[in-house]
Length: 298
Image 1 (spheres, rainbow, N blue to C red):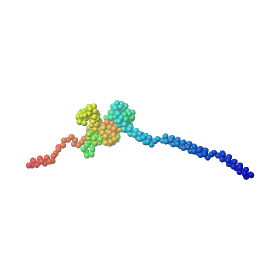
Image 2: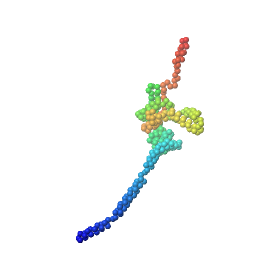
Image 3: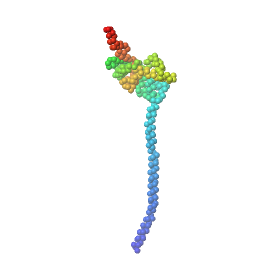
Image 4: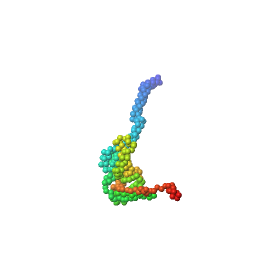
């Protein structure tokens, strides 16, 4: 009997423990629900990541747009219309020459403020302010090319004798003399030194050319003016490409020297000599000379 009572009490205890444990189906459901919730949270996070991350095509389009933007600006930069009013405004503010102002505006897209800064950085503004100063000192220099067939004399003026004795000034003058020796087409210092008669003759010659016959009158005048300006510049020393530094013109080289030295510098005049130039040489025909001798002997 005692054993039976113990067995019954043990069985009751086991039944009570079984009742306290939740059914297996409920635990499974709870696990499934937890997994679903976790999957939904992961899905939401993935959606947020997908929404935040830009699409590859969009990134590519943006990159292409960013690369194209500077190119478009570079392409549009030379197209900026430079009016005479803008050139005059910049010239009044800086005192620089007309061509320098026009070039500066073209480089800066027509922005007057940026163009003035461009001129200042190039030393053109300071050089323009010094251009009104009297330059009566300087030096006369010569250059004889190898073979002694070409010679040059050039006078370059400075404000003081002190500057004229400096190495920077002497190197500039020697470079200018060599420039003249290497430029057979050069006839005068600056474009404004061209004679009115020469300019008018060139205009008339260009107006008569056949390729302009079918053009309207106003268009013909603009084309002719452009051609004449080119011819005039080709004969001006200051507009030539500087042989000592082909990235600049002679005018720009002088302007930089003015900014460096701090005094006004002007090329006043020059002469270029070529051996035998202007002398009419007697042309001899050897065959005719022999024939003439034979006739005399007969």
